[in-house]
Structure formats: C-alpha cells, structure tokens
Length: 221
Length: 221
DNA sequence: CCCTTAACGCACTTCCTGTTGCGTTATGCC
DNA sequence: GGCATAACGCAACAGGAAGTGCGTTAAGGG
Image (cartoon, rainbow over all chains, first blue to last red; front, side, top):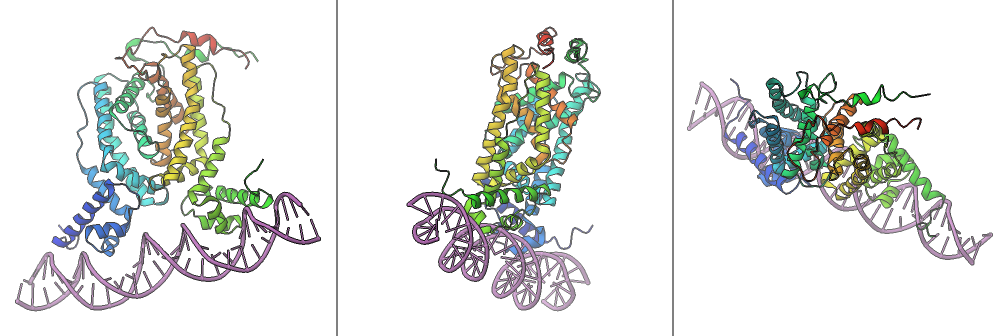
C-alpha cells in the first residue's frame, strides 16, 4: 500500500508539530489565529503549512477529524431518559475545551469558506447519526412510536448547545444539559416527532390538543 | 434638540446609501463582503464608511438594529400551541431573507470581534425577551406551572433555527417550524421547564388543557 | 449672502495574508 | 554508502483591506 508519497519521519513530525501547536493556540481563543502564527509556534515555515493544508481551515478541519475519529460511547442504559441525559452531558463535555474552540472557529468560517462548511457539516452528520441510536433503541424497546424521527429529535437536543457556544454567552453547565435532555425526552414521548404526526398513541393517554381546532370552534363568518 | 452635529441632507443621504447598498450586497451572500465594496456600491468613498461606522461589523450592526426596531407582533391567541407555532413561523420568516444573511455574517464575526458579539447578543436578548411573553401568557392562563422558565423554553425553540441557519444546510421550512414549536409545547406541558424540577408527572392522563377549549374560541377577532 | 466647520473625497501609506521560485535537507531505496 | 527526489526553509513578491493627512464641498446659522 502506498501511504502517500514519503511518510517518513519528517513529514509526520511536521504534521504533528503543526497540529499540536494549533491545539495549544486554540486553548486561549481563536482570535488572531493565523497560519503564520501556527507555523511559528510549531517551529515550521508557513510555506509547509500552506503546502500541506492549503488553508487555515484545512488545519482546523484536520484537527476536527481527529476528534471525530475518537470513539465516543453512545449511552445505552435501557432507559430513554437516562440515555438522553448522558448524551447531553457527553455533548457538554465535548464542547467544554478544545473541540468547542475548534467548532467555533470552523463555524465562523462556514459562511465564506465552502470547505469549512463541508467539514463542519460532515462532522455534524456523523455525530448526529451516531446519537440517533439513543432514540432508535427506545423505539426498538417500544418506548416510542415506530415512525419516530430520530434525526429531528437529536437536532433539537444538540441545537441549544450550539446556540450557547456560538452566539449566546451563557455557561453550558450540567443543569442546562439535563434540562435540555429532559425537554427532548418529553417531546419524544408526546409523539411530536412521529413522522405522521398524530396525537399520542403513548400510554393510551389520549387527550389531544388537535381537537381544539376543529369541531368546537366553528368560525361563524 | 441637538441631533448629532449636522444631520443635514448629506449625512443622512450617505447613511441611507450605505445601508441600502449593504442590503443589496447581502442578498447574494455574505462572502467577500467588505467595506470597500460597500462604499463602491453606495457611490461613496470608503473613508466615509470607516469614519461613521469604524468597521464592517458596525455597518451590519446598524442594519440589524433597524430590523430589531421593527415591531413584531408577538402572537397572543389565547392558546399556547397556536402561539408557539405562530412564533416559530415568525422566526422562520425572519430568517428567510436579509435578516438571515445578516445574522449569519454577524455570527461569523462573533469569535474575533467583541463588538459584533455584543450586537448579536443584544439582539437575541431583546428578541428572546419579547418571545417569552408567549410562555408567560400561558402561565398566566394557568396552562403552565407558575415557576416555568420561559427563557429556557424560548431558547430551545429558537436554537434549532440557528443551527440550520449557521451550520447545517437544511431548509428551514414550515414543517420544521411547526414540529419544533410542537416539541417545545410538549416539553413545557411536561413540566420540564419548571425551575424546581421534580421527576416527571409526565403523561398526566388527566392534566388536560380543557381550559383551552373556551379561550381559543373567542369569536371573530 | 457670507462665514464657519462638519462631513466628505482622494491619494497615499501601512499591514498582513497568501503565493511563488529556488536552493537545501534528509528520506527511502538500491 | 550513494543516488534520486519528496519535502522543507528562506526570501522575495503580490494583492487586498485597513487606516491617514489633507484639500474640497456643502450644511446651517448669522
């Protein structure tokens, strides 16, 4: 197998040095992060960085893909609430340090950098895809309707974290994570995420709100 | 009253020209948007732009504050589900065109521009604050517990929209808006957003909003 | 109508990112 | 060990956006 061209010591060393330096620079903020600075911190010439990654976002993307390749244990405790809560806490921890800064930096580049957009979207697609298992397990256990839209539920679960990370300046604490998870669990149980959305089949606790609209209110004119 | 220094025709004209030009440039994407380009499109020298706004983000912020000053009618139909759904559709429409591009551009600048961060956060704080009324009205009607955290609920409602706007590349359609609104409604009813959160009273087969029935039927608004 | 001066336009400089050409190093293979 | 060449370092360059000094225009009050 041809591993690139010449992956011998030096190339690997440069790559490692650059990624390590980038990580180090990321911890104290993305502001002013530039290829030149990274190269300097890595003890490498910026030309090498441009040659290998072509872009600042390329470096960040490479770094992100390292995190993406880390196997995260998707919770599977046999209980939907517990699984969602642990998942939320997992997301929270994942955003706490470097990955958070990394995502912030890449997300900022999305509007004017197609490659950055592709990288971030790919990351999300993969992570969300994995997380769907939590919902699908509950479906398999019969806790949720068969036609539950797992993807949509996970999106609602993850979104508040990113709002806080990217825009709002409020802490992403455990309380926040637990509450968000509980909200999604409640929504799931209500049947809102059924693809053919009809009032809850769950627990036979009929009582729809859809009844409100039709019969009782006959619009006069 | 001293309106600045000399608000006579020219200043106002330049200001209007710049903002209009910026709007026009925003519609076909934020990419490559720069002070120089705006000035050129406005038939104005870039020096004037820098003097007045000091920054590209300054111009965008000014534009955003115009949108912020537009009065949006917070839904108040007497029914939580309807209110939330209309609110979601309002958010959707608000993100459809220029404001969406505007928020995207400013959000991208947040990580490396404190002023942009302040502007965006201020915008969100105001808008979210207004939207809380929808929840608070429901509390006042007795549909929701007294200690419901309106802010948290609105955050969960709005977040998915921004995730799609800023990161993910999926359409923000009406179906999406309705589903998100329904999810938040379900979560609210489950008591998840009570500040003193107690283990689910969920699926309160009884706890029906039978009270809703009459209120929503207020004839001929 | 004139005078003061706020606000603008123009040309220029500065700064920083990203690129290129070329000589140098050291890897991988014989 | 020696050779071909991938990969790197260095320095100079290009391009574009931010910022500045100064002369010019026109608002607004007398």
